[in-house]
Length: 440
Image 1 (cartoon, rainbow, N blue to C red):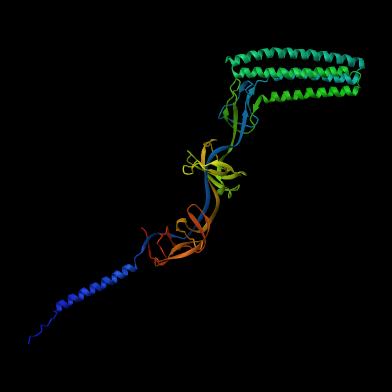
Image 2 (image 1 turned 90 degrees about the horizontal axis):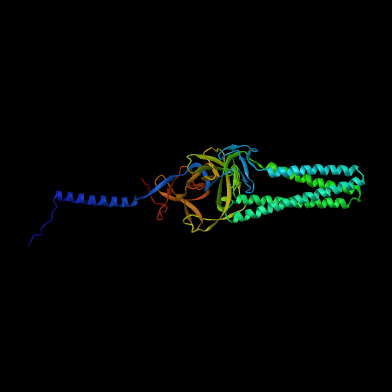
């Protein structure tokens, strides 16, 4: 019989086999452990208390606190200019002197007429009927002579105006010369009408010499009142020839030139620069939260300074504005005009400059808050939540109740505690129980 061969391992071979088994076992264990400890790399933030400011920003243009616009009459010549652009003036200062010769001439005539009318009244109150009739006849004759002179003057000025009209149409004289001739003709026409009225009154007075003395006195007093009113009007016109500032401020525009008639549209502008305002158009979504007294910060383009300001005017009517934003497609928006008054104005500011304002709508000095980008929304529950990270870097979902929202942060009213860590911009595949590691 054959003997079976016996397989016998050497001691060295047994040791090698044991080492291989041990290595394989360790590898399996390590592999399983690695799978269990695989973490998601994320950005982590911390729930903390901070000052929260809810604000809106807008761009607008600087306006003076008050603007005094004075439009110059093209038919009235400028005699003297007393100020220049950039000069500061006080309310009541004379800016420009206009030609008042014609008004003064008319005033002298009416003052003489008033003296005559008062004398007539005195005579009516203390003379006989014969003298009354004589005075009435003299007054009528004087009125007739005045009317004839007024008509002659009107005729002469009419001829001169027709000549100037032809010259103006031909381009031989300026519009100022044409307007001056037209103004003189209209005043002469008024003189004729006044003379006709005076003559009518004189004739009525003459025809009523047999009327009662009281009626005559009343008529004369009415005539005196008409003359006095005309004198007052002329005095006002003469006074208005001294063009004055209606506000303390700075002359920002001066179109008047000495010894020249102004052009149509020429004006003088005085700006009250004690304070400046930034005029803004705010969309209705932010405007509903605006009210007078809210704090603001103004940054004017080109000036390296931020000015403190306050909301002083909130418009009551929304106006339709075209959105000029490149991505808006030119659609319309409803906006409210808001004025923000600058508290610390200086000489660097000019009306018309463009500036940006940040208006504080709401603020809280110390509120628990997290970043906007840490909040997710459970659409089924219609609630918001965040992924909170515990001490073992495991995440769990916590629902929150939010309050004030700013540009970057959200106030947390319920659901989180100060110092808790949360995931910023959590990935879509993140779920409760996952292990995370802070991204470097």
